[in-house]
Image (cartoon, rainbow, N blue to C red):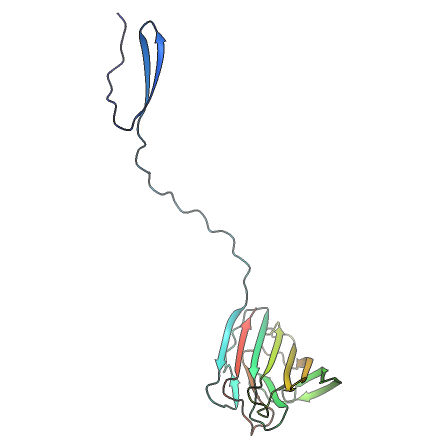
Amino acid sequence: MPSFPTTTHIQFGDALNVTDLGSGQIRVDGQGSVGPTGATGPQGPAGPAGTGGMVKLFDSLLGADAASIDTGAGGVAAGYACLEVRMFVRTDEASDPGQLYVRLNNDSTAIYDWQRAGGSNVTAIASTINGDTGWACLCASSSIANNWGAVTMSIPNYDNTLSWKAATWVDAYNVSSGSGRAFVRGGLYRSASAVSRIAVTCLNPAQKLRSGSRMTVWGA
C-alpha cells in the first residue's frame, strides 16, 4: 500500500506549487502566508561626532542709544580655539568718523598695541599705536542717515593664561556716496589673563552707540 502524508489544511493566501509525478500522482508544495512582523531590534551605536561650527556666546542689539555693548563679567565662555566678534555699529557723533574702542576684561590700562593699513577713499593710510587704552575701530557717525559700519575681529587662543593675546580685525564704513574708509588691523593685548569679557565703547566717553547697533561673539 502506498503511504500518504498527513492531511494539512490550505488557507486563503497560501501559495501552491503542483508537480505531476506521473502514474496518476501529483505533488503539491505549499508555502504558508507571511507571519506577523517581529519586534524591532536594538538601536545601533551612535555614529562619529560631526565637525562643529561656530557657537554663539553673546548677542546684544541696542534698543536705545547706549555708552557701550558689554558681555559683562564672565560673559565669554572658555573652551574654544578662537573668538569671532561681529559688530554692526554707528555713533551719535555729528561728523565722521565714529571712533570706537574694543576692550577686554574691563581693562582700560595702556597695554593695547595695534597697527592699521587701509585707506580713505583713494588715499592710502598706515599707522601704529603702542600703549593705547583699547583696540581702535572706526565706524559711521550720524552725519549720514541710515549709515552704518561693520567690524569683524578674531582673537585666537583667547582663554590661555600663558601669553599675551593677539587679534586681527577689519573695520569699514561709507563716508559719502562713492567714498569710504576701510582698514585691516592687528594688535596685542599685553596680558596673560584669559579673556572672559569683551566690550565696545566710543573713544569719546561723551558719545554713544546708536540704537540698532549690535555685537555678537562666537566661539569657534
